[in-house]
Length: 470
Image 1 (cartoon, rainbow, N blue to C red):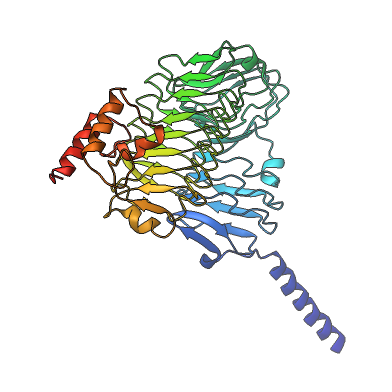
Image 2 (cartoon, rainbow, N blue to C red):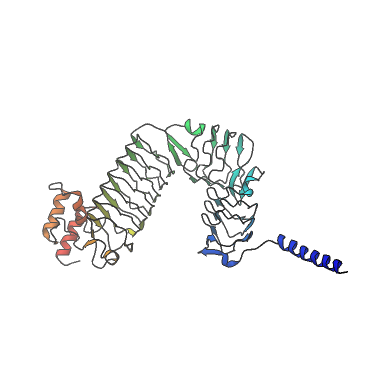
């Protein structure tokens, strides 16, 4: 009797343990770090995760290398998944929901059973194609797909032709990288973005003429050999990496139709000395002209709204910068480490200067910062030992930069003698008339009206200032 009771008790215990072992652990709300609808990180250890409905974006590396995660439920509120979001989640087999997803970043699901064990032809989430598993040499993309994710066809050895569906809007970085047999590409005008190196290493790209244009007038690559390059009228975007490390081009002329220059578009162009940035240009993206070793001067148009991170970083011969714009923000490190930079004029249309935007410039002597610039970080001009910032006594820049750089409130002091008088107005007039031109560095003081140009209006401003009418 005792043995039967003991066996019964042990059987109950074993059954209970077995039941507990197969019950999945679920995530708690406190496991998620969410800011403004962006899921920054998941800090739990559950094997089954339901992303909160308050999330609209799953950020880069949010679940990086989470080996506990077996399944994830993505709500309809999520429309974007960042780079490496689920990278290295070696147990993740089930990804459910996500019907509203329109973008999936690079390597987002690499290393997961969800991706590795999939047998469907088009691996998608929402309308984003993550990977192509098909065996056909000719791919006709379904109309349901609006985005080809980065590296979706990476080094595919079979595909020879690709035809986009009617609703495809973007093709990610390296999407068809080194698809060696790809010789035919057909896209509609609905494609408004093509990432860096999307078609690099394909027969199709190698066979194109000087200007390779796809989608909605996107210049994907320049295959020409001319030093002076006039981009054809009608081109709307210069794609990321379009001229990357070109060693021939010396001068670039952009038509008024271009509104965006992509990431690293002209990075490392070793002979580029001049670029005429066009009226109509709205955005210069990250590192667009970084490491252009012979670039001498930059003047931006008054239509510009954004200069991205490091856009002109490490341009060692760059001497002068004239920034116009439309409420333009100068992002992180834009003109950092330009060893020859001496002067930078900012117009009153500049809204902000980000961290280290002009840092580490040993020869930078003068920069104008108008009072309309309402955001300046204290380290914007870090390690600029020769710098004087010309601004107004009641400006935001004065409060932000006091103690970190030398400040001058003598705008209009064109002869730099420490006072603003009629001699300065005369000097500006003589300079404009080319009778007695002043050095470029003097332009920072001559630009009395803070419009990043030296004109007769500056002489007028000085005269009005002397007459105490300003």
